[in-house]
Image (cartoon, rainbow, N blue to C red; front, top):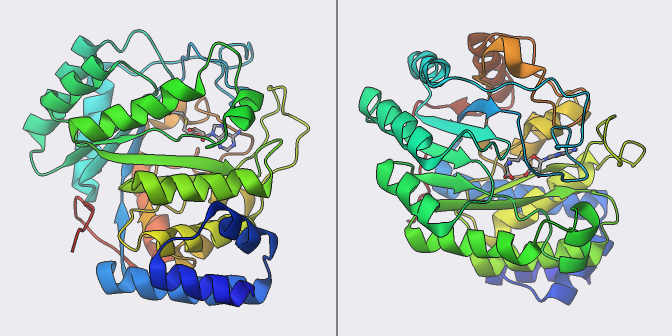
Length: 347
Ligand code: SAH
């Protein structure tokens, strides 16, 4: 039965919500292995054995939001706050460029300091210093006008995880002031403007049931994002979810394979969170069908402060070490990191 559903997914790149739920409920190691082999086959036809890299610059851990799972939430009084200056961000990009990165991801909390004017200036400078690079933003919810201004300044991509496609579940993970509908509207706006857009969710987040994951998969199938960021939920000691269970490597990899089979072209990172719960988590993610890694380019002095969850890896090394370590890891499983913008391939 489950094997038939898997075959159907491979053939049609689509299942009903109920079928996605059955596929998740009927997880077995052998089905996971089958889906992973198929996912890798699908990815290889488009992306070969190359793995794209994105240099992650964590520009600020100051955030006006209070997401219950997140270590940099506003209410966390133990979080040591920082904000990078324009010069510091430009330096990270310069260093990243010389290491071979051709995409920079600026990620941060929703920090009011980063107005459109401030960001436009940074985006334009990075683009003029490195015209062959792509810029990805991951700065949360903003107005459509703001997204448009940043796009016109040169930003190419935007990552905004939807977190969960189920409104009730969304409300269990976020305070009342945050709106599921607005987050979904932001994703639509980003796409309309012309960004390459990424959505995504946490695996094993508190109160998550298989029906929620099934809805996440259906949302991905229908919204057709260019990128999708998924990683295990990991509790953070200074949040209300500190005693919740973390997500598993097995289910995360299983979902990576399914997402690859929904859209063989999708840009799918093997995330730092996956590497945090398992020393070879990122290798396992690639072997399940992911094709992107995102090494850290943030200044070493601030890395530990951008702590979304406990024990986050890659907070002690220099950027060059981070890049070399990931290159080696990818080589060890037969993949190769390339110096490339790593755009979505349509054909
Ligand atoms: N402020 C930006 C960036 C958020 S941080 C935004 O709103 O998009 C990037 C992602 O980290 C989040 O979207 C969330 O899915 C993930 N994250 C946050 N806390 C986490 C935790 N405790 N465990 C695992 N992932 C987490």
